[in-house]
Image (cartoon, rainbow, N blue to C red; front, side, top):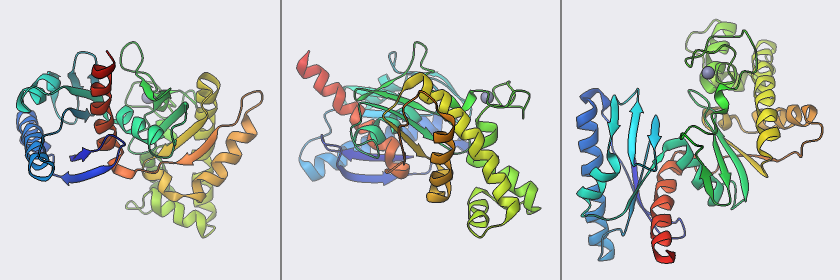
Length: 297
Ligand SMILES: [Zn+2]
């Protein structure tokens, strides 16, 4: 887990990392989160003479931001955890915001990262799976049930590979970093080979790699065109492991999207800029948003 002290303009003042240690069970993980928050508050007192005025926490899984409850996270084993109240209590009652990890990372990418303050953006990390965050006027649209933006589960190949969500042919079964790793391991016969190896083989002109890569890019472009049609974003920010392939991904992807659109406007398609600090910067922005809401209220 990553934690930071963040200034009002999004500047990273201090950053720290600790192992999540999820094998210790959900209660131990929560203890680590609370202890980490308290240590960060103490660091602020030592370095700046005062504790942080608010805190933001971003967690994976299903998150009820309005209620401040981490509803469910398969990897961490928690259910209906009142994390906002627990963190606030540990920090002496300061206001606390609870966000979803991808949407919180998207907030930072849109506001102070690759989106550069764009009024309408869509952020999608291509990692183990594919998630998404819809940015509108400086905030993230979470949907009526905190489930908006899940572009990874748009079906792009009906009858295709079975997805963890129960459907077949979801975008994330074809174009996530994990999907490309699986496809390249099968095509190359090297069980250890991953998406980064595939990108390298594409760059050296390996025809098997080119076929795997093209299939993923075509699926991704099909999914993105659905997203563009619904959302009309000004900027599409793509992050996660697969985006590390740089122009090997972005060149053919831009071309494939452009080829597919008809009446839609082509958004800028750019790589994410904040790397794995996006979530923690976004949590800081959520905290600052709480304070500005209080002042203007
Ligand atoms: Zn799915």
